[in-house]
Structure formats: structure tokens, C-alpha cells
Image (tube, rainbow, N blue to C red):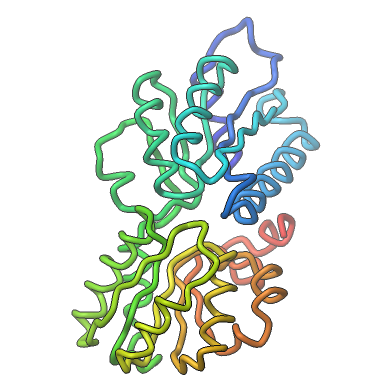
Length: 289
């Protein structure tokens, strides 16, 4: 992905006078705040890719320079970071901004200044449905994730489902997409509960969900809250299958913090750091894990 970003940047910087200058790539991630763990995984991955590219001589003889901004898990900060990278740092391309609400907040700045951004993890379908010509994504929207799960619904025995999601564009979009898919599969959709991004006590929502008598809980949030929900669900003896829709591709933190509470859970991810050999290019994936 970083190689593609460099090539985009080279096209944007087609100037003979800059032929030896480093290629600058802006990176916007939540490095602090409620979802900092996930943002720092992306940051570390980008830095590994930068070092790997530069060790091989760069791209067309030019080294890669990452300019990294912290959006503090806040959409307003994401918009400010995008403008700062574009106006002050003159980056020709950006990678970001982790959460859908953060990405959506940054998008008007991309259109205003004519700078492309590659979306690496955000799942809201609205990101690529708004007609912004400067936005590109490698992350599947929630509708695509739901389609991928469709074939496993019967195997999982999902009959009566409830939802618990972070109250953001990502969480709301996930409930809509997965709810539509499950209804088409004949599953009964019950409660849809939300939690603030910074919430740490989800017992009230879990109590309501427990009362519905469902068999499966679909959970949409970042790994920090996933671990808390799993532990609180175990304490309440929720007795449901838990399926996470994104946010769970941080295995070290999930296993370390959730422990036994994560046993028997299912996770929808588009990259598996647990099993890099399962990726299309297993050898390359292992180099970055």
C-alpha cells in the first residue's frame, strides 16, 4: 500500500527539480485517546514499510518520508491534521484516518485542496458514496464485510441477533449493513444498543441485550472496548456467541486483556496478523508482522 502511495505522490510531484528530494506522505492516525492502540498499529506498520522501502533504495531513487499527525481519536482533530499536512507540510498524498467519522471529517479538506487520501481501515460505506474524487480505499465497507459473513451464518447457528456498537459512523453503518444481511438470511434482529467511544462500562447495554433472549451478539468497536465488553459479558453470564465486525485485528491486546472472556468468539477481519501465511502474499505479510 505504501508503494502505491509513493507512486501517487510521484505523479503529483512531477517536477525535475525535486527528483532527489524525499517523497513526503502524510499519515493521520489516532495515536492518543480511546482508540490509540489501533492507530499505533497502523503507525508502526507504515514505519516498517517506510524502512523496508528505503532500505531497498526507495522508489525510483527517492526515499520515503512519513509526516505523522495524531488525530486524538477526534473527527475535528482529523480535519485539522489534514489541513496542517496539506498547507504547512505540503504533502501530496495522505494515509488515514482510521475511524470512519475521522475520515469523513477530513474529506472536505482533501476536496478543498485537491490532495488524495488512501483510506486504510474505515468501514463506513458513505466514505466512497459521497462523490469525493480525492478519496480512495483499500478497506472494505461494512456491506462487503456482511456479504463475506453471509455464507457462515447458518454454520454459526445465528437465529436471534442483537447489536452493540460504538456510536459513530462506523458503528451505525455496521448495524445497518449486518442487520440487512441477517434479515435476508431469516434471522430475527432484536436490540440495537450503542456506546460512546470512550465508555468503559457497558453493563447497562448488556443487561438490555440479555433480556431479549437472543443467541448471538454482533459487536462493533475498537479492540479497547471489545475486551471490556467481553469481560463484562462474561461477568453477566450473557451466554451468547459474540461476533466482532472489525476492530479485532490487534491480537496481542485482545488476548492479553480479554483472556478467557474471548474464548469462542468470532472475528471478521480483512488482515490476519495471527496467520500471515493465509494472506495472498504470505511471505510479504510475515515481513510486516
